[in-house]
Length: 81
Image (cartoon, rainbow, N blue to C red; front, side):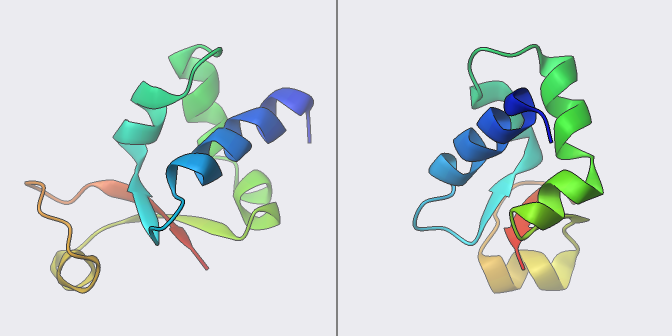
């Protein structure tokens, strides 16, 4: 894993403090120091997420109710395993 990938995931984990999930679009918008393309590509890599015990999933109605997500539609979220 590159140092950029580690830094991006560390910023994601900082944003998740006290929460079980973060919306992918919030992570992409709020990570500083990297291009949005680099952030998107890093977040989509399974080996990067699994090394930080995270999963990238699309929230369905059941997941939204369980986690208390109020946004419209079915967003992609990053959750702790």
